[in-house]
Length: 294
Image (cartoon, rainbow, N blue to C red; front, side, top):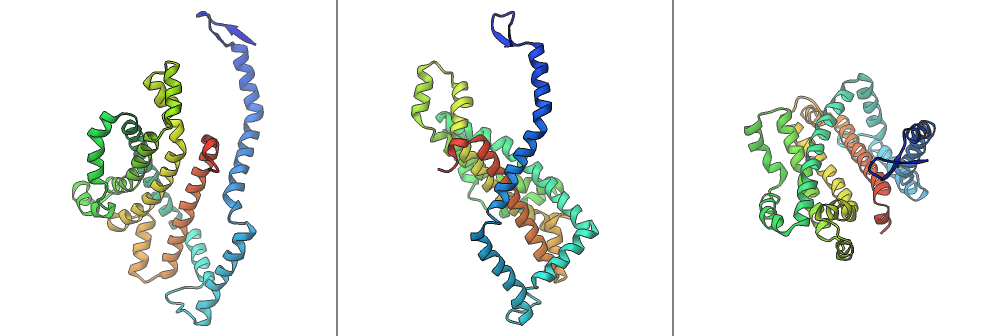
């Protein structure tokens, strides 16, 4: 099964590689289907649980009945059926889907930049006290500035457009990921580190094999917070400087007093945020099994 390489180390032969590829082709699609089913069972399980349905269904019924009965003004609180019809018309037209696609494109670009910068900086600050002393005060001074306060100066620097919107979304996601990653790495159990050092582990090995994995659950949790803050900044950025996206649609609806359209946008943002959180929960279950259920 295993061949001895030129260096004297045991490794996979070409035949073993072909067998592995064949096995993957046979089991790969089945594995993808199984994991997809697992994801959707977990994601929708809490929504369709009997405990939640007894609260959710009456809430939807009240949403429909109260405006129609005149208990609340239907001009301010449109009935559920009106919102559903509006959502259908917006979806069928195709234009709203285009706005969603534009928003998500900006959001994922900014989130990727935030992940690529905040996690390495947070790990370095948590790992090394010299780095922490030089870098942490800088972020502690800037972090208390509310992200919306950056809007005017960002418009002046970047102008109105994609760079300005991407920067604001990045700003919303960056600090929660940075500080939670830093704190989680800093709080790594010292017993793991001492054990690894006894066996001669290098600092690079400690970072890649212990610090990051011990902090992984907290890092994923920080990304959840970053996603929520990023969505907030997405709407703000598109409201102030956008000609497309859900924030722009929301602002346009406000100008023309189209409350059902505003509600559809809000529900859409809620569903997107919920779905992204469920994806991160799935990643946590698969990558940080020892943290789940604590």
